[in-house]
Image 1: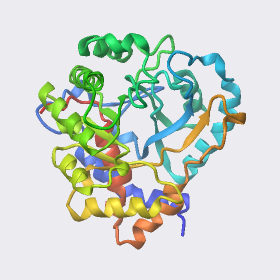
Image 2: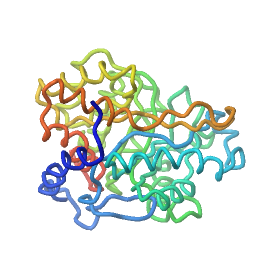
Image 3: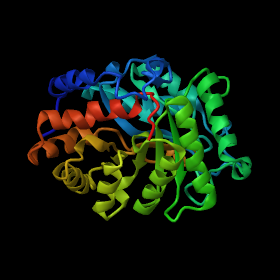
Image 4: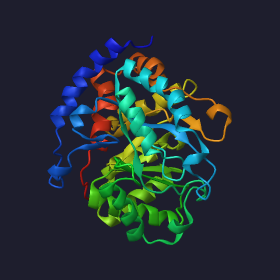
Length: 345
């Protein structure tokens, strides 16, 4: 049985209190002035995040970094296509939406800002470069830059906003292929670690497999960053659950983010495995949905953002998850993950 908005809000109200009790202070490395969450409309208190989808997309353009540009689509058309899906999220009680489309694959802060204003959703965008897909989406200039130079580019967006939009990123998004990581992808991780230590922005890393995830954690440790600075994006693609546990043991956020009608059983199994090992507090869940695809007729098939609410949450209940545990997944964990603070190793 799917949840009504009233039922969902009632079930997550306790989580808001639980998450709020955590506050913004989580240790001596916290810098109080950065204890906030950065949305496309500006900073908010972490207490305002509420139920959050930590990995979704509005628009993507897979043409490649050398050809991507804003005039390849009509923002008005995309706005009209996507807005009803975001309005529906509000009806389910969702308050915050994390758009994970990176630069050079269709990141559009101006579009996200317009959608946030129209829907009253709190939307986050990102800085960073995406090397996964054998560097197709990585601009040529980024292939020869040092970690410090890459971090400087991302920190400029953090400090001054993205292009002329005035929008500041709420996290760092990078992408790497399967391990062992190439030297270039290791440099992306180093740059992300250095940018994190300067800004406090969390690193969401599209990660090819578990071996790559453990390499990421090792590199971040060498840079002086805690494992809790990292979100292992697409962890559901790794079949060996012991690698999920090892990453969580080092503090990483383990994100199972392809919840769709056909993938609900698999995601239930993964979350159950983390719960049984005592790592539920390191889990993020999302759908990797949406995907207005530039260049496809009418933007291609658009996957709505409702499966988590209509199918996944009820299935969690049927598998014995308590209201507090569900609230941990939907409210407290994303809030902790995206609160801006330096996490030192």
